Length: 88
Image 1: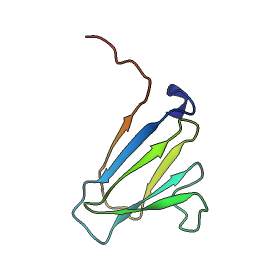
Image 2 (image 1 turned 180 degrees about the horizontal axis):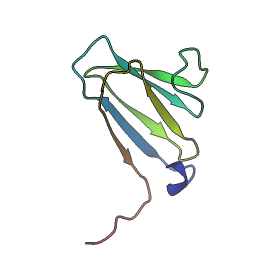
Image 3 (image 1 turned 180 degrees about the vertical axis):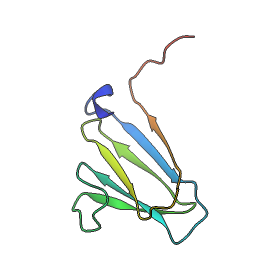
Image 4 (image 1 turned 135 degrees about the horizontal axis):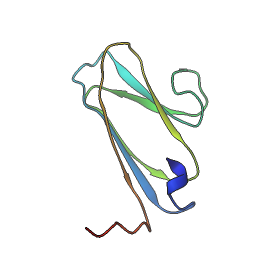
């Protein structure tokens, strides 16, 4: 969730579609529904095997939606700037 990060830092988001299908994809968007192809906030589409890394300011929700009802898997990670990891 975006509210767990400090605003206006140099966070990064990594997202990968782990599928091998080049026919099905995920929409990736800021804020609004990622499922709408015409959403003005759409960042792009991730087809099977595709990945993206983009800057993230911690202020905005990132949403994803599958283009199919078939099972697809999405891998993601946030590289948080200025967040201290718990000692274990």
